[in-house]
Image (cartoon, rainbow, N blue to C red; front, side, top):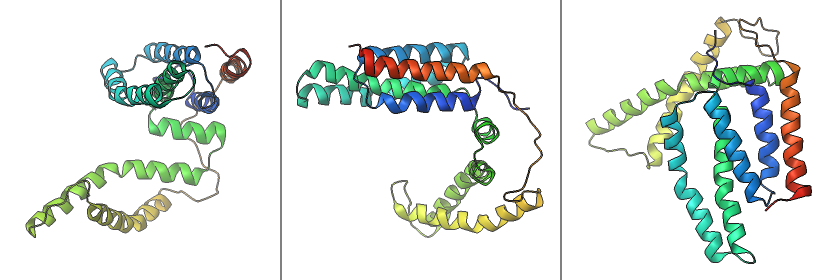
Length: 226
């Protein structure tokens, strides 16, 4: 059973995030940006996410928000204060929108939900799951490449492209094993699969997503608050 933290289904949260995130790029309202931040924080609190992790992420984004705010204040044209606050708060609005999905849902839960409710390609979903499950082996391969280079008197750092080329070559060697493993587990591209876990999705969650997206769109482009 997949551990569940989110109040809403991950597929609904993804659609809501994209539905608000796209018009957010064209909205010129500071108040709406702050409202999105407030609602996202309340949702994260309701999901009881890690407070420490949330604070670290928000603090890490502060230089980006400050840089955007400062650059538009100094180099902007027209109402520079308004423009600076729009872009400064927009950074946190986007960040908190993303956190409502990434901090409340695991990668596996999100991908399986998108496959079940939004009909995302099964091949794409299980390919991504396999890639995420290989992350620990990639870290191990990275250390092995570093150690073998040290034996030869060479030092590899993260910013050197040569180490990434070796990691890619190592990963390509795993691709054949991965394909055989998926076939041995009964995976066939385009074929019907038996689900071990079924996640119900009530209609009211889609209604909430639709109301949120349409309300944001109407307020941002017709009411246009400051």
